[in-house]
Structure formats: structure tokens, C-alpha cells
Figure 1 (tube, rainbow, N blue to C red):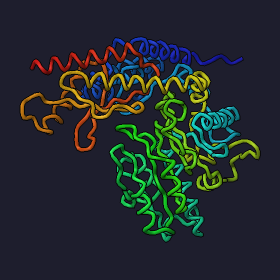
Figure 2: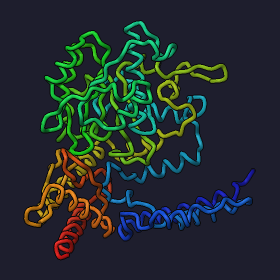
Figure 3: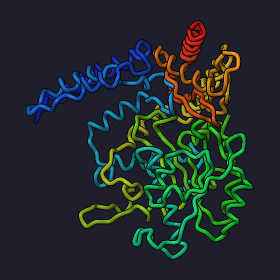
Figure 4: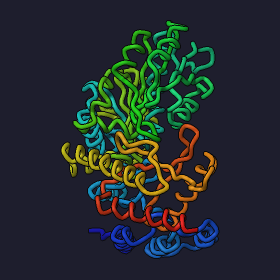
Length: 475
């Protein structure tokens, strides 16, 4: 019997010990990066030698050289952007995925990977409240979920007008009108660009004070050309305040004009898993497609998003391919028929593991816990001297602002002060927050979607922010 190459054991043992050390020390290390660009380039941008070095040495030196250049995003005090952590079962399954080295393109390439992915899709549709007949794809993130869904929309809208876009492309095709609100995320614009429409073709409609697309604005725009092929983007949880469009109002309006409705639910679609906040997605199942992430609120390792399409035939027709050397199965699900990738990582394994670790109750509790901690952070910081709440979280997203206490201070002074306080918080290493400009004012975003965030974390962060504000005031 052939023995395992000893390089595997030495390398994996080194990686295991270093990974455990990293995770065990998250509470003691800075959540923000502590090494600057020059230091990282000095350590990492070394000449590539002609001869290789032992793999375990590579792993150990890599770990040493990235010191200070990693964010503490795996831990419970990271609140920047919308970045989740990684559940233990998901991390372990991800390691196995690398060791198994499966190409999850076809059932023939890895029968187990195909069935696991098929199962994950069924589970997700149940949790998110989507129609059973909906097709799905596991992609690299919400960006590619948008691409997948909009490709299906493009196929369906043009096929109704007698145009085969997969055969003839877009040159000479009937135009597709794209409507959204000013609260849309940039990943949608990138998807539109990648699919050949151009972002200048997106018509942005006004939203109300709660960040919701105005029904009358949508109706008026659709009425301008009732027969036009139309794609409508709706929002389930925007990036700044977690705003939700009114699906039960807007989707029927769009459907009266035979428009395709796509929902950007990068993290907000997960509200469907919580009885407490699932009213926010009421009516969403009537849409045509939905996009969300796994590496946000489900807390699986990065490189995981989910696309769902109600019209399975349009979904498959927009992406499927046949070649003589490929082995397609008559009964099993071939993954490459449903997503833009050919050779691809078997990303279904970590999602499968995460969902089994949590169960439906665990997913619900995770969503509600993150919302609770976000509310505590925003309200708690807002009560500190020199701070104010700009947006109290409805889900897991909120905004705070820091005010210049100088008499006669202007909005520009408050903007500067806000950025200064964010930088000072990062310098402490106690927490990580990001900044944003919302309705013309600078703010600190608070985004909680890590399974490890706890009440002690919240208290520790509130104390750290209070300390920063006291020190800033004393200067």
C-alpha cells in the first residue's frame, strides 16, 4: 500500500497548529491591521528562487510574513462592511473540500459533491421561503449570483420577443429597460456591465425616507413604455441601513407590465429565517429571481453565494453547454448547467456543514442574535457624549455619527470628526468599523453578522469607543 507523502502531514500539521493559534488568540490581537503596506511588501514580495523549499516551511513562513496584515474578521468584534465569520463545521468542511480536490462541474466529476449541492439548494429554498420549483446555483458570491439571475432574465425577456440572445448576442436585440432605486448596490451595476447592458442603461428611481422604492415612481416609469422588456431590481436589506422595498406592493405593479423582478438580498434575504423580522420580506416569493450570500449571515468561508430563479428553463438555457467530451447524467443534477463557472470548487460542502451544524432553529437564532447585538451597539454608542444615532437598526445594520463639539461647528466639521473617531477606534485594535457617506453625511457603519459576536464583545466595544471619545475630547 502506498503511504501518504510525508509532505502532506507536515504541511497540514503546521497549518492546523497555526490556524488554531490564530483562532484562539483573536481576543488578544488587534481587529485592525497593524502592518503597513511597505512592511508587508518587504516581507512578502521576496524574489522567487530557482529552487523550491519544503512545503511546511512555506506554510510557517507565510504565516509569519502576513503578521499584522490580517484583519480580525473571523472574530466577534469585527463590524466592517458586511463580513461574516466561519462556523466550525463549515471551516472543517472547507479544509476537507481542499483535500478532496473535487471538480464540482458535473455529477460525473464528483457524485457526492453534486448531491450535496442539490440538497443545499433544497434546504435553502425552505429556509428562505422560496417556491419549491425554483432552480438555484451555488456561485462565488452575490456578485456572480446577480450575473446568473440577470442572465436568466435576459434570456427570458428577449425570448418573449423572438430573440435568441445565446445564439445572436445583444447586437440588434430589442432593448431591455432596467429600473431600480438609488439605494441599489454596486454589485448589481457590475453584473449589468458584465452582461453587456452598460450601467448607463439603469434608470434610478426615487426612494422614500425609509430607503424604499416609491411605488408611484415605479408605476409612472413602467407606464411610459408598457410593452418594453423590463428588468426591475428590488432591495432586501441595503448596505447602509438594511432597508427593504415593499415587495407585496411593488412586485404586483411590475408584473402588470410583464417585467422580470430580481431581488438583491445579499444579506437581507435571511430575514425570512426569523419569525420576528420575516415580515420585512412579505411578498418576496412572487419575484422572478433572488441573490444572496452564504459568506455573510450563514457564516461559511468566503467564495459562497446563492442564486435562485423561478423560471428554471430560462435559468438553464442561459448557461448550459454541451460538448462531446463531457459526461452528462440523465437523472442527476450537473452543476455547470446552472452557474457561470466550468471547473469550480465544491463549495456545497461548507454550506451543507453549516446548515447541519445550525439546523433551522440555529439559523433563526443566529439572525436574531446579530440583530440584537447591532441594536445594542448603535444605541449604546449613540448615547455616548459627542455621538448620535443616524439610523437605529431594523435588522443588523445601523449608522452613528460623531459630532465636533466646537461652538459653530459645521457639517463638514462633523464629517471630519466622524472619520477621526473611526480611525482612532481602529488604532485601539479593539473593534473594526467602516465609514460611509449616507444622505450627504459621513457616518460609521455598524454591521453585525458574525456568529461569535457576544454580549461581552458588545460591552467591550462600547467601553473602547467611550474611551476613544474621552481621549479625543481631552486633546
